[in-house]
View: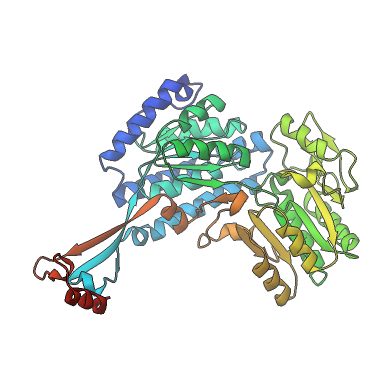
Length: 472
């Protein structure tokens, strides 16, 4: 590995527009040499990535705490430990994923053999998000490396401590000819989007997702868009209310609600809303104490701009719990709203913060109708003891991922793809699904010279046509 810049402070080149052009050209040329295609190269990079995490866990945790107020355990669960598990899973299965797979060949193609041959796409762009600034850059990178690609990483400038750390550490551990980090904001991202990448992977909001897709269209570049939206949580009257509340609190208020798959709002059966709110209050106190703003386990809003956006959602709203905030510290208390206006901003926009609206509905049918009248969500949650009701919701709704009787736990299973549908995104990754996203499954047929049936050649005849029909 060659020596490279370690951060913007050490060398301002890694966010200059000219440096971006040069880096893309360098990575493109390196990929053309075939150096990244071998399993040895891929395994080495993945092991180096694991070493990076092991040797700098404390640095990563400090950066996450500075950017988002994440405590050590939350940093481990949702970012550091998650990445280590993804690397371990990938290393375990990579040899099998890379294997050429033989498939059957039709009678007309005999003697012959047909194969599916996975090959890397080339040089890819990974644009991360600020809410999980380490995980959402490194997890796609694991997939890109496993498939044998070169990659340019663009961490979010909003989580600046983590972005700077990635820019410093990645060149120290990974192949600098194949992987680069670009820091910066709009100008740098715009310059990156002008490059003819072989794939673009973006995690973030719908507005920027459309910009990425438009830019990709200029070069007919395929895209993976991991977006978000308003993920619903349906709570049936027939449920274990205390466990339900504990799991909703965990899924909603981790990272102060700044999670793309956090429950955005709850649909609860009429007459059961007060019982649910009571249990949610109990769990909030249990998990984050009487004063969540002073709890080391409760995160902060990423910056004051997002704080102001979230605070505006609470104006003139029916607050059932919480509502206190601290602008200077970018903290907003876990807050519950009961039946806010469906036309209000809090019910029209993705919240992405520690505010949970609770909407009462008559029954499961009304809940399903409510969900289906809106854009398809990235995640959907249903809490019910009734298998019939669980299956009813699963059958009649569409979402990127669904979890029954829990929140976000599908994220821990690398055998499940993660991705959106409709406005919540396109494409998927995690485990084998990430390998497939960054690979092209090349179709290959090999034939022998020793037998050449001339039935397909001109001049044609009814006899040849009859024989071809029989060979189908």
